[in-house]
Image (tube, rainbow, N blue to C red; front, side):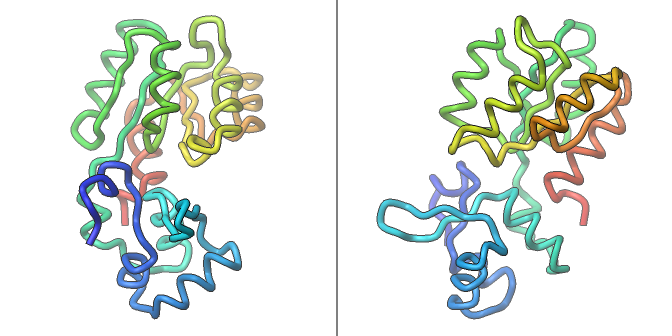
Length: 191
């Protein structure tokens, strides 16, 4: 059973993954050693798996999504310019996701390093930084490389730069249904 700290961080043990897949614990260790499921090791060398990676693995190999994973509300951080646009995005996502909105981009980026969300939604330009620059920085960090990034952009140049930096998807800024659907698919909410 996961501790409260593990649940809040979205971390799962090898035993939990074995239970989800109905396989032996050694099988999970073999899959991890072969790189079939993303993981990291604690200082004590125990395997840990992040929620998004577990969901990716289960979907890829056709395993059912356990209620334990489906019941958690994934955390989404917003870096969206424009108050009206931000209010619309917040309203669209709050029923499905735990949405975190930061007072300014710098504060948000610092806090993401300490408490990574499952995903971020960002504008093509956030303050002095481009969305692609922020995504690139996230993908370089050991603690944040697993974070899914969805860019709100209409321009081809911004889309291409974000994809090259490691964005999971891009959505038109006014397509709130598409944004919610994209995040649900990325977070494994849809089975």
